[in-house]
Image (cartoon, rainbow, N blue to C red; front, side, top):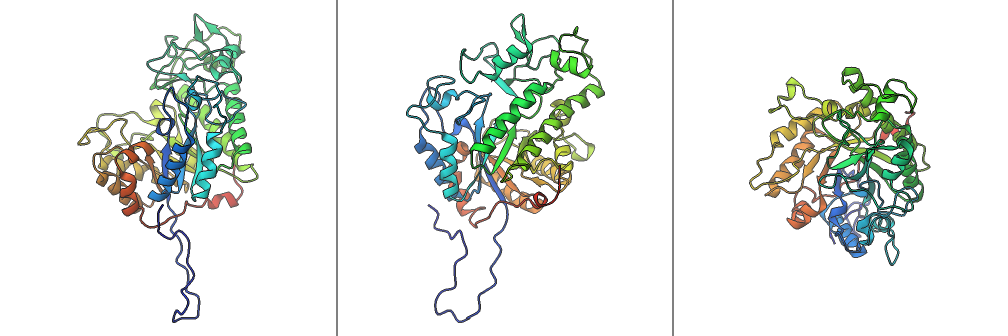
Length: 427
């Protein structure tokens, strides 16, 4: 483990001065790392607690102070839950199968991380309800307890021609299938289910925060699912289905469904005896503006995924936004869209629209050289954002970038930022 001092040290005996020196404040900087299910589990094999213990030791040694640990991927659970079945990758034996011998990965990670001085924020995929490409027609096994969300949606809203009517749909009636298949954000029942799952985490685990992901629509299109169309037009659930028409009003209404859920998450977490952070991984481009001068007309969270992330910050119902400004795949040398120049423009844009809340830009961990990571960390500090979030642990470990962090940008200790607005009345 790191031999660097992590806490203030008393003056040595025999020091010339008898007065206590003024302590140097420990700098505040979020140094977060995403830990996905792929970073520590292997399909078809039981998950191993030793891998989590090693992961925590390495992240603490590298100088991180926050783990964004995935606890929910596609309405499954990497912890003991009454609302979602055990994830297949925990037991290696199938969805809903508990680990044997029994252990709780989230509880174990929290114990290890807190002992090492790391915060743990539960990385929670919001709307995914089932696998996506290439398994767009597969369904979770049944019966299981807890019942998978996919089947709860089918029971609540019905099926037609094999289509689950509680999922997001394209205009032609096909289920939207991208990285996942997604529950309809327009469903009040879905909102309540998600809030119950979050409340369970807050009540049963000594977490430091809840970190939302996939809190957006699932593809670059509006959803024409029956739940959305009927609710938008103020119709009963059994009314004839109205026609779909995408205009500015419908787009704004879709954004409001997500905004409302984020606000309800925030209200829930603020009401806990020990309030938790609420943060979110958000689309790397908020809105496309002439000032950003972005080439190639890329997708934006606001226009294409109905994710009004800066409204959450400006409205005071989220603590931190973590824009995912990194490529999905890396070539050597890097030839992705997300150049350093675009990275700094987008990070600055989020900072300008932060409303005083924390901006923690994402940085990819798979670059060919560590210099690409280091220059983004340096620029983040120049921009005055609250820190950085690196994606993800496995890339950093495999490239030995954890060592580079320890002896480079993270060689001096830092603590996570405080949330001063939590001491004042708020939403």
